Length: 343
Image (cartoon, rainbow, N blue to C red; front, top):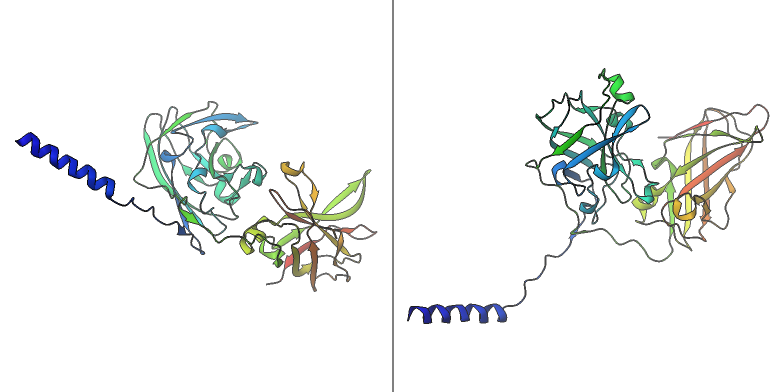
């Protein structure tokens, strides 16, 4: 009798399960519009729990394939300028090390394969060390992002480079192997987040170049050994991502302005072009039908506020990047100017 009752109960459970409505998946969460903190546990990297090193000139850096990779965690909402990265680590090295320094970077094609997303000062700051062979070292370090992540998020390690010398570390002549362990931290996963949808149709947008470059240094450009112009090429991916959430497409009208002062007089007009310089376009493509238009036509007096502005009519969609190129022609007595934005 007992066996019959059990069978009846099991049948009832099966029928109940078949008739029950399938559980709805949680709706995607809207990504926050403001800054976020990304927690990264090196033990949860998609690259695995081991980091190896290779020699690069006179210093060592972690190999790309074994450097902690968190790209799959951030696909829903990419880290942005102003966000915080909280790095949690717990590891064991097979050799003694005075310490390690860290660079958080983007190695995607959209970032031209290497883009530091934290400051050089943070890259040169010792965060591990000293490290004894076979002994666990652990801790937490926090960085602020200075630019947007384009696609990938990877953590690279260094020693024997300039920052290590400044820290007074002894030189190491052997490459270590470091094995990472899980910490109590939980790596931030934005895969269930959605961001505001970018407009699919052409738009008119006005961008302040100072939001990307508060100081612009014009460099001498030579041809056949002679200086023929002074110019600067400035990536403005961040300006587009932060304003319309995408790169320019055909039909967009893009106004780019800058208000500031120059340390030198400039008598010739400053001209500008909208361009892309990535592997996707073989390193150069002009994006506007009216490129090389005047960005600032009036003479500039050193120390006096000037404004550069022009509107580009986009006739070629950007693929992986976008920048503005500005220049003025050389003439006798002129030099390489530096522009500082007006607060």
